[in-house]
Picture (cartoon, rainbow, N blue to C red):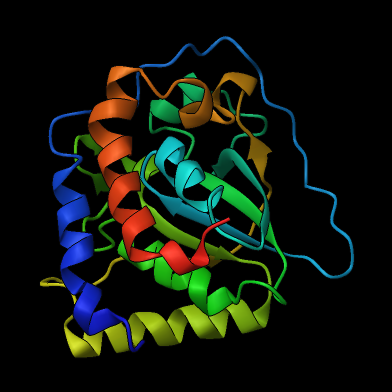
Length: 217
């Protein structure tokens, strides 16, 4: 929590990056398959929803100790949803990134700090121009310890009024994870010159890299 006072304006700056652009313009022909990443005994899993998964993926791929980041869908009722179906807002799924990480290298608390500071957790079902339940702020926990930590952080941030409005982040037990279509994976790495990447993701990444330079690969 100690970094929050000096970094509080970081999140506000990130919010402004999303005002005019949306990530809902991709091809939607591929069909995802239900899958859970294979882990060794030392790794743990957490699933975050923080708006467009292209942005979330780009951030966490740079964090030391994060071993994999997979974009996908969670929290809905339809089996094997496609991107187009999720974007309709009718399936109930959120765009998420599922991380596997080594807790001996990066703590869950650090992952949470990055989560809170790289999106706006106070806007319901919205991140900038990306509007709909699929863009909701969500932590899908995989262990009781993760739930406790997430609940405590949310309560403390609200009590300290770090954000001008109350945090609306959903904290829910992880459900079935559906990996997104292949073209969504490594999106910023492979499409960094696209307009959305340059106008929305890159400024966000620049701020993130500066604020968390000691946590990077």
